Amino acid sequence: MTDHYHPDLLAPFLALPQGDKIQADLDQLRIWDFDGSSTNQAPGHDSDIYLRPAAIFKDPFRGGNNILVLAECYNNDGTPNRTNYRHHAAKIMEQAKDVQPWFGLEQEYTLFSMDGTPYGWPKGGFPGPQGPYYCGAGAGKVFARDLIEAHYRACLYAGINISGINAEVMPSQWEFQVGPCEGISMGDHLWMARYLLVRIAEQWGIKVSFHPKPLQGDWNGAGCHTNYSTKEMREPGGMKAIEAAIEKLSKRHNEHIAVYGEDNDLRLTGRHETGHIGTFTSGVANRGASIRIPRHVGAQGYGYLEDRRPASNIDPYRVTGIIVETTCLL
Image (cartoon, rainbow, N blue to C red; front, side, top):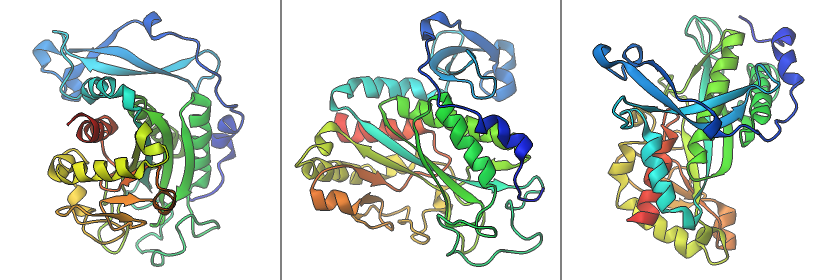
């Protein structure tokens, strides 16, 4: 498939208004179940996994009063399934609710054609070196913008707190940002945004990869940079709270890396705007550090920090949960 405008695919999303507030109540929704043995979440002799509704979004595909429901997985005995990281994160966020933890996640991803090659790249070859693609515009610099715009509109309609999109450093690599979201809602909004992306790309015949290093060589990897603040950090004088949080993060580097995404060692090499996976560093405006303090935050003395270690394939509940646990509860 060549990269060009798809009017028949894009038209339904061009017509979407921004979603109204959802009137449905979680308590009105039933608990569903599914075959967990088919998803490696349960053995065949006890395969029913229960889905407990956790968040509701408007349905951009069907419109009207239809909704999309994000649910948590529970076992037959009432315990959370081993894949249910939301359950533990929700407990952490409840304990830390007074500090008002805010997050903004920068989700990078890569587009591939059905034949497994990066979308829009020359067949059997490579595009020019990185440089003109980041935040680029124009044919030959960006690919599948129609898909990206459709995803953005769908997120707005669904009520996802999406706040931006941009073409990334490697051609056919993109990023969308979700946030600010408070507490457990960060994971809810990111997971639904990911679902909408994959679901819409399906209509284009394009594959979405969240692998942190989809291509070896002199190409940037893909991360999910995590911007974080508490109420104290956001107020004048908050730099002291930011520095205290960084100190706490430095002492649990290995524990964080353990939940910051699979194959992250292929990305965190100290090259391509990353810190090395084995070393914790921080600095103002330093994109080669583990933790970056934005320049304007350093200048004004309050704001937020950016954890640049998480990979593009993270479970956002695990990442947001451990950040709050480390900085607020230990």
